[in-house]
Length: 233
Image (cartoon, rainbow, N blue to C red; front, side, top):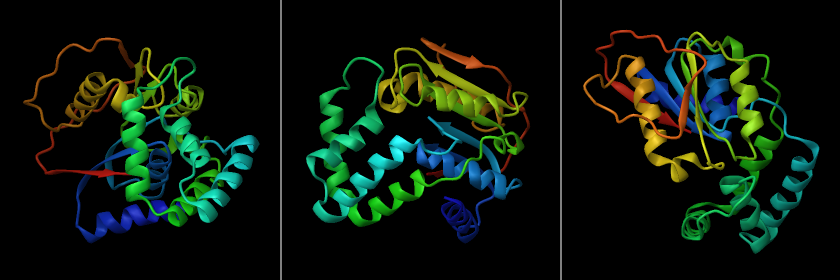
């Protein structure tokens, strides 16, 4: 995961990006957190959806070994697809929208190489614990978290270790582990408020958020006339 964080920096350096706002979901959120720790002066802010800072539980590691082997030997089997669907759409109760699930599986099978994906999943499951390091992230952070997500506790724990003076959390009611798809308007409004707090896109307006709670910290308001770049992980 640390090597992937270095890859983010390589992209930033290659394109000469200056004010970088990182956007990461799940494993991507973990990678961007590591990037901010290793290169504290580079990100202007981070938007992290369902982040986790701790090690993977033993049961998750065990299942990962099975699914990675299946990916390598059988490709995208029904069991493998179910594994990724649960991780991406998981809810404490209720079922995800089947049209979204079908579209997700099609994208997965059409666009991803099974061997490369198996290596990525294995790297994420072997991640080191950075729980007690995230307090050292210097840039403002917005955590987005669904209250019905199976990753809810991990995200709340991640946020609890951040600097509350510069970091916020957007808690989405009746939402599983895919807030961008389940609550797109509330997510977009929260993101817009956050980047406006960074001094970007000050002229855009938002509607009042519904079913959300944004708080436990406040973002630094600084005038910034430079261009904005977003790195998505």
